[in-house]
Length: 265
Image 1 (tube, rainbow, N blue to C red):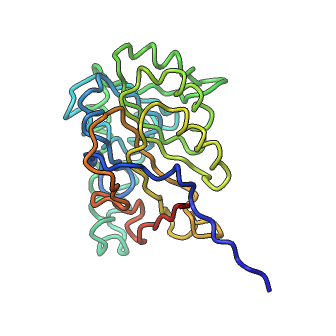
Image 2 (cartoon, one colour; image 1 turned 180 degrees about the vertical axis):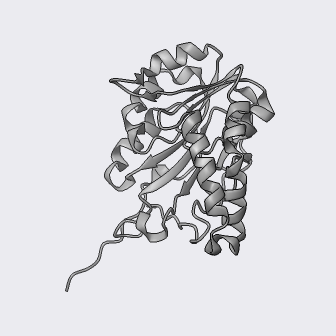
């Protein structure tokens, strides 16, 4: 008889306390929970990874009215304009007309190129490069020094490249007020993530499992292979009973249920 082994997320992945969290960004994918004190303390935002969604950055700017540096080589004004034109076609597809959420998304995206041009101006800058080493890539230390307003808040969603900059985040952690980061291929990198949490001076205050395409992002043990984590430098806690899931959590893909998280005891 073969016994099945049920894997769980490491205990260190679970926040120890409950914090005062708010949600920034659009509903579902693109929205993140951040801790209020770290948001209040931050004097700037560095965002790695945009695609066609900068709702997090817009809400951050609305609250803080501070310098924001965004890094993403996959988009530029011409590609955003093309994406908006495609949204016009998608808006009137029969299958989309009767889906309220998809219809509203396409309607919003029609005007995305105007929003891009309006938002990325003055002290909100889109750098058409990625973080890392090589052609058309920016060095993390150069990025930190360029913003020159500390402490910074970091938002990182770079599709697996986050593991390349974890050591840099640790190196500059004294200049960081808060962090939201999306970890990919978690099943392959549990030890790396655990080591990062151990070395990072900021406290883990939230975790949320991602569910894009539903069960496609679950491993063989039904653990998510993609999670969002939020970190804060605050000492203010609400209780020793973290809320997981949090009432403000939303599934990344609204067509599927959120991913339950199980932790080792």
